[in-house]
Length: 408
Image 1 (cartoon, helix red, strand yellow):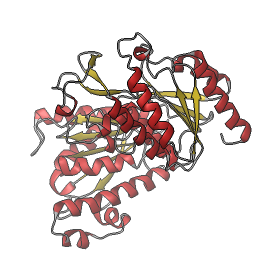
Image 2 (cartoon, rainbow, N blue to C red):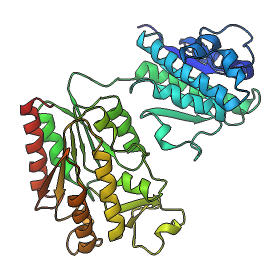
Image 3 (spheres, rainbow, N blue to C red):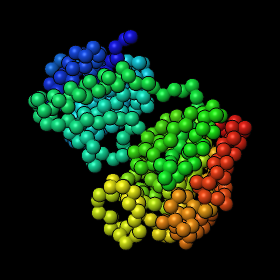
Image 4 (cartoon, one colour):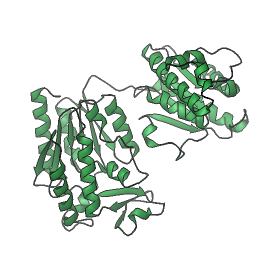
């Protein structure tokens, strides 16, 4: 077996010692290394495999132009564009098997673009002084990126930062050796949901779709799950999507930090992927359970899911706003869209007599959705609850029809 090659990316003019240490650890463990310099002003102690000139030119600029900005932010954005393009090109040519990028805030900004340019299954490691920080927006994070805090590494090597760097080097090399990349032999269905306590359709849908010859990936719609879902939808990885848990959209428009980003529920439509959509937990706004309730949501009923996560019940007006947001997003779709609307509710807790039952709020949502549904969306109203067998039967009926028509 040929040993993996790891692409090592960083500003070699200021972090040559740290990057060389990373390289040494990878090589000492039997791995190979391809080095990429993303510096602007200075030069590495010895030439890298991919020079800063090659990098910036891949993004349509030059080092002279980057320097002429007289702005470090703009210059590094030139380098980021080039590094992302160069990484994608090198991976397409099978020049490397995994990537590790080192940096502070500037390097982290660039690293997110580099990792986002690579497909799911390519080991991606970012060693950063701001790993896990709220500075990093969820919509910049690739579906399968790994981050390691570069502890004590702001200026020069020491025993503390070597502990981080050596672990990162071993992690990316081990991942490149062990990774089982996605199987493309079966068409993939992307589905959003929550756990069986609140949503249950996937329990019956998954085996039914698998019996039809499809693979099913169910994404937990709590921010990062939706981010991964959108990332893959944007790569046209799905034969179809069953986006039945759109709660992250409500989180986003209501200002919650539990968000999958502005582009939630747009990437499948942008790529023409057939979409089945519904209302799982549409009426709840997830918030961080250990933080104060946002002022905008103060006074609304709250369901504490656990110590990490709480859910705020939407008011009727907020549900109308949610309906409009869903319709606006789906109106941009270029492929077929069917909206399954279960008239009896969208999560186990909102059934009649349930702890979160709100007939007035549900009626407001349904009314707004009916009035705003765009012409490109087929609205199918179902006299059932989203957790009833009738919902699963309706979803499979639409799916089977699309297959018969050759849309899937």
